[in-house]
Image (cartoon, rainbow, N blue to C red; front, side, top):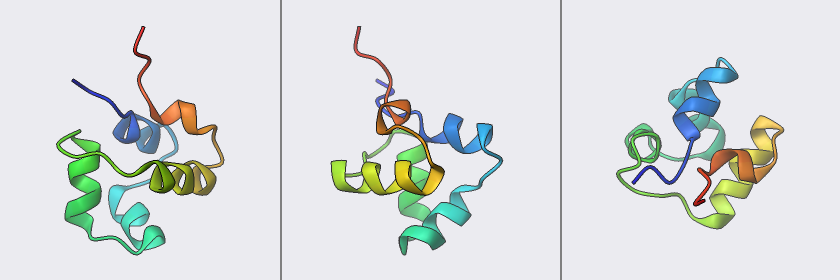
Length: 65
């Protein structure tokens, strides 16, 4: 199940996972695993990502409906 939309949002904003990893101080492999929905970032990290991308945190999540 694809829980987060991180990869899509990064593409929409012309940002890379490498950029995000650097901004968050995380490894590129961790961010890559978030982008493929292999693992999920914490709620706190999602909020931080939303702030960096200047979007509502809900835009990073797929609807469950």
